[in-house]
Image (cartoon, rainbow, N blue to C red):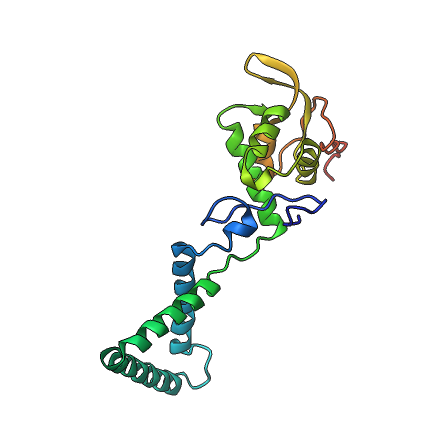
Length: 214
């Protein structure tokens, strides 16, 4: 699935955990959470370097690296007392490094597919399904899918393997195309389920003929 909002292919890029609006803009905003995530990544790298787990002479490497860290801490303490401006510059440089390290990792196609199915499942809620018209309106009202028309959303459903039923009954209403909650749950679950026997539209895989076990 492409992540370019102007591309003519299937896409539904998720909005990052920090920021709102267009995904490509939200991902570039300077947000405290991104800096904190970058700090954790940098700390993890420093911790792994200090432990020297993959080093052939781990004991000597740990002693040497611990001495280097102690010397660096001493120099930082002296700089803070003698030249606090340099310490402020170093803190700013570290914040920039943490912001760059916290850059969101582009999700894989399988992750995008699962997030899309989870979004459909959330829109269905406790009902047994949802009509396509309601599904399209809900998705198009959100920033990540506002640029997708009905045809592209339908293509995305087919691409994800979601069965589209020609006549679906939800509560007292019937006779409209929709999606069943059990079908979405089956796609999110690794356990296969039986194919529905009622007529379905494009996107539904035909049921295989029954085969007796050997």
